[in-house]
Image (cartoon, rainbow, N blue to C red; front, top):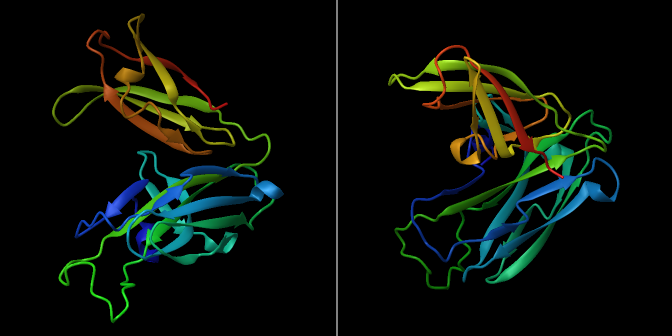
Length: 251
């Protein structure tokens, strides 16, 4: 299982070869913020078995890093956390509380990003003297949740700056605009309610959230860059482009 976390994977996904709706669970909440020290260095999660079968779930933590194109990579980080219990067997329609405690640096210089991984283990829990609940030839589904959480020191804030904007053309000959932003602050942020104003030949064109699909709502981790490519507006004149942007930081 651990080798899977070295690859880029989606925030919430199913790995399946046989779809069986009775095999399922939920992880709540899906996002949390920890303090690096004190009572808030421990947070609780709830694993819910809302299926009609016994299931086994394992919980672990991976450190989260993000490339400029948004692809995520993960490294195991269990040594920095106490997870209790790390493995569990849940009876049908039952709930298990999992406590996660930060054991790492009590004074990090910036916010640290992690993901909590809850995985349904690919093992059969049916007793030998019981009739199998699924066809013998079926392959058991694996369900994984990846929750996001942050170790956020007091006073950490985001500081997103425009690094560059350039006119480009894709392989199909379509005109596009590449915008590179960097978060020079000490906390992550999401580009909520984003607006971008592009200017060429002294003619400004303002784009709202509906025109910034793939950019609006995206996260920029502390100390990371993100590069976004959007269609060039038809009403933007030819020539060099400058840009400004604004968004709604988290409260």
